[in-house]
Length: 302
Image (tube, rainbow, N blue to C red):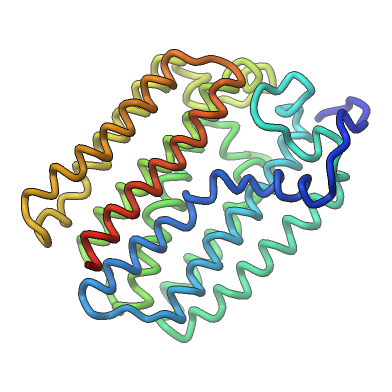
């Protein structure tokens, strides 16, 4: 537990403090899977705007709740200190009181659950309810509880599941009434690209995470492993996009090579930069997910 005095390190506006805590630069990880799944539903003629919007609200609100929860629990566990090289955290910086942050996280998670209840009208509750419960439990369990997943090396698996497989497949399911193989493959691709956001964080924070007992895969296996996994995830995401080639023809490989060029440039920056300079790489990685998503939308919708 962090027992350091909780004093502000710099004055910021209340609005900026909360905006920083939500980490808007990472929200591509939750929004893009819903956009891709809805585009796929459009492609097969089953797009439904209301459940698509509800899925978007659930995904974004759940990620915001997770970000707020991580801000609180990482501070309590000592993973966020004044030596942090990443973007400032609201609780550790003294901008927002710990109890206020925890309350905000629970309220946001409650709103996500409320939106999720609305999805029960669009699918079998035996599928949707367990998925919703899993999402609600994973938000605090990521950094809290007796076995915080992020502290035991399960962060990458959680991201693949909850920022790829679950949102894409469920968003497609509540619109199409079934889960297609194309949805599964694209869900894996989105999950892999979202893992890269986590990897940039973990490469940047490796030393601080190790000191706090946060055993990420980068802490366990080293920086080189983390940068190599980043490249592997990018390459595998392009491979997992193969259903789109069936829809639009083999020439679409050329478009995905353009996306891959962005990923390779970002990977090069990840390998050569250190410390706070990697914050830029984090933003570029999120940008690349948007590029991938817009590419898929253009191929599936138009």
